[in-house]
Image: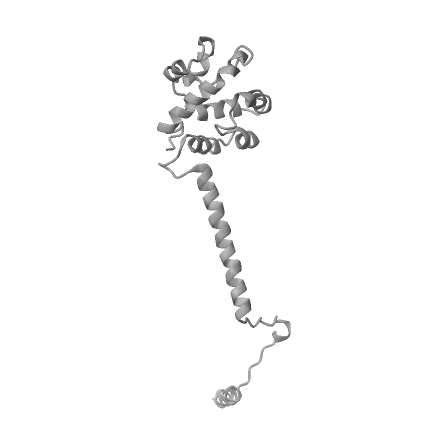
Length: 190
């Protein structure tokens, strides 16, 4: 009992003197003292980070739109973005109605045909596998190119047979665009 009382008395007297033993003090880094200028600079850096995040968010919103408010091109991009088996470079370069032009078709086919299901999947996103025959007739698409308007079964694969249709491609693309303007894409995105 005497030992416990002695230890308590010793601890109380040491504690009362303000003894503060810190064995790791020599390895601790000094904490910076922040003045007004440093606080202001830190706030500006934080605000820039938020501004950059907002800029990225706005850019993504411009590219992919807001669900329920997307235009035809945004619906096409959202559909292509979901194509996990399609070549990413082909998706980035050609999955846009502005890039999907007659002067780009041969380059698109040359670059993307060897890359698995890319061409067929991107075609499905653009065409929605809908029947565009009525629109194509209105646009004046020739009979031998109607296979590209009747997309329920996917893209025709005999590209050489339809090479003459490259001249009709703007009209066909216009029909795809018109359809997506007022309908969800093939994945159901609006």
